[in-house]
Image 1 (cartoon, rainbow over the protein chains, first blue to last red):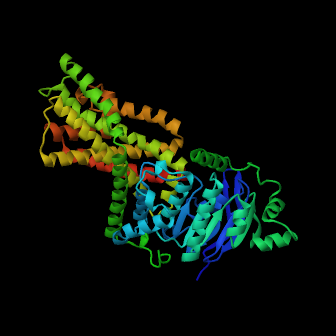
Image 2 (image 1 turned 45 degrees about the vertical axis):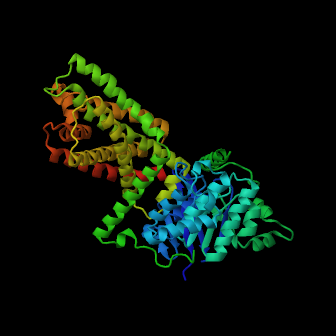
Image 3 (image 1 turned 90 degrees about the vertical axis):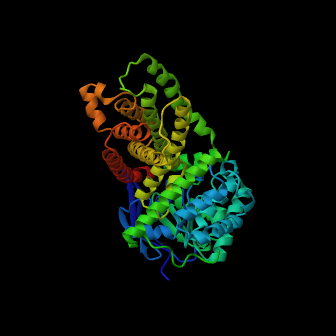
Amino acid sequence: MPDAITLSGVSYRFGDHQAVRDVDLRVGAGECFGLLGPNGAGKTTIIRLLNTLLPLQGGDIHVFGLDVRRQAMAVRRLLGYVPQQLSIEGALTGRENVAWFARLFDVPRRERRGRVEEVLQMVDLADDADRLAAGYSGGMVRRLELAQALVNRPALLVLDEPTVGLDPRARDSVWARVQDMQEQYGMTVLLTTHYMEEADELCDRIALMHHGTVRAAGTPQELEDGLGAGSSLEDVFRHYTGDSLTDPKGGLRDVRASRRTARRLG
Amino acid sequence: MSAPAAAPPAAWADLTPSRAALRLASRIATFCLVELQRLRHDRSELVTRAIQPILWLVVFGQTFSRIHAIPTGTVPYLDYLAPGVIAQSAMFVAIFYGIQIIWERDAGVLTKLLVTPTPRVALVAGKAFAAGVRAVAQAIVVLVVAALLGVGLTWNPLRLLAVVGVVVLGAAFFTCLSVIIAGLVLKRDRLMGIGQAVTMPLFFASNALYPVSIMPTWLRAISRVNPLSYEVSALRALLLGLPTNLWLDFGVLIGSVIAGICAAAALLGRLAR
């Protein structure tokens, strides 16, 4: 079976700003892989390149052996994607939101109703499925987004800071479901997060990014051991990225998106 | 859920032309269904959006009918105006879709839609025809008000079906125009300003309010390349039986929609970045 994701020499530039610089990465099938780094490190750009939202400028990306540049539509069929922002349609019910994506992923009509019900139950929203999504709490919205992302049974689930702005209980609830699904279905998960303890607990392997490059990669244990006995992942993060854990410097767009999401969550 | 899909449906490139057309129709139907669901959950918008066309008919139409300022032959001015107001309300419904797509971009919805296996052309076509659904709901309100005001409309079901087609095509074109502007200006506030600056001249440079024959020559030239004029002509022919070349009207509208969809799809990537 090919690797879930391979990036070879990937670079991307927004005007004068080099967002990603010559990145090589490999994510094995079935892995939970974390991309960590401060705002503006290039994590979201990598995600947007591999999910075909941005055109590749340099290098190659393959998803399960499919070339992102030439087989974009086939790549999209393998993906489930939860972006940074809270991106549900508030004027529809939870069930309608999920059914919409089931149709867009061509889930066969005879399976559609069952599939929608299944993912709604999986994220514990079956009882609220017929309420307008505009009335959902932040944690419920994220779970609904997970349901939307899972309705096509993706081989690769991409989560771009899915817990930003959520309270600790809602965060735990989202990650618990991601872990359940990964264990149950063996899908590959690529996630970005600012929370080191989450990455430590969830990810099989991690890549630390800073200024568009990968500074270190390995299992959380390998990275911590590499820094010395008693080191935490947060120490590793600070070591490779400077003291930038709380530094909002970087992509203004990222910061705005995070603030917007936090505002919408109240 | 058993396991990740082993054999996902074929990619668009692998489809035969007829199956690709079916899938395109399925995407358009999906967006239309979502629009109907939105309408079902919030019917108040239908009422608030109906105020402006009703004002055009009740205030402007009735007043100008009395002063006989606009030569419309044997057709009462209110009757002459009603199809123009239908086309105008469809245009105003459609022009909000550019704002909506920027909102969807800011909220991350557009990003998620662009990551589904839906070509950008199908995405724009879906949005355009979904606007058509909303415009038809709006047109029904205007038709009812016009009938209550005594406008002599046809009730022939085939003609009314054709009216639906014209309204959908008109709304689809103006939705594409709005998405094109959104793709160029990228910001909501700029779009609102430019949207007004484009729609009002298109409205006044059409035959919606007055016949082309009384326009100055330069305005006639603009009216001749304005799809809104062809939409209004077709509506007048179908609803009132006034003479027009329906083949030409439909041809221009269909051509404009196809060109609009292609141009808007080409600019959608700018919004995604």
